[in-house]
Amino acid sequence: MNSRDPRPPRDDLEACIRQSLRAAYGSKYPARGVRRQLLDRAAEQRRDLRKLALPISEWLAHSRAARPMESGWSHLDYINLLRALGFVGVTYAIR
Amino acid sequence: MSQDTPLIQKLQAGDLEALGALYDQYRLTVYRTALAVTRDPEAAEDILQDAFLRLQAHADQVNSELPLAPWLYRVTVNLSYTWLTRRNRWRVPLGDFIDQLIGPAKHNPEPVAERRDEQRLMQRAIDALAFSQRVVIVLYYLNNLSLQEIADILGCPVGTVKSRLHYGRENLRELLNGRAPALEVQYEFT
Image (cartoon, rainbow over all chains, first blue to last red; front, top):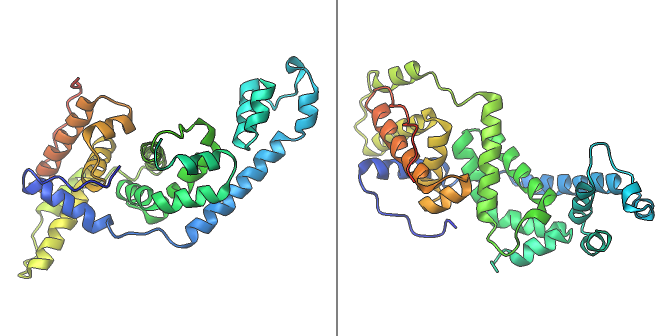
């Protein structure tokens, strides 16, 4: 999306804006540890979601109307949670 | 189908390595945009992480057939706005700022140093812009996005982007001349 050549500046102001932004940010990098931290947090987020989603077998054992929900959750919220966890096939089956 | 499709589909199936690969691909885009808007390296790193955590949490809602960049830009802008709103850091006292700009300039015969001074002043002027104008300036001049792409990211008409870009430039011109910036006209082009 940002791979095209820069447009030619229409005036000095445009050239100055572009040069200033590039000089300030064009060579900035996030710290190396951010990737590891992100993946750790992502794994933790998945674990938290899985805790919420359990016990799925018990949930599926109920009829749709009687399925237990987290407080404030709708049936669709639960479906979306299962999909976020990768249970795509299952969620289509239980709709 | 976009080049991101296979990785998004893997992520939707719960593959964390796909998240890492998408991070590798887009980290600079997200980080530099967040940094240019917030001017805070720690905040930019937090926004970088949060953007990809949101991608994981909402992967099922992302259209895997479309490029991921616009989605990431939108989340980055929203997270930056939230951060700025909470910290209230974008409100540079305008009087102080103008005093600094029109104060006695240090004479420096070195062309490189002059250019750095110009860039520093321009950067301060960009910081003083309203959030809506600053975001458009950053997306257009730093990320080199088209008006239509920016409109899609911000969810507004192209005319609004044009208007913000125009008034952003005019305000920068005014600020650099040591005058108070003009207010953005409230009507929108269509």
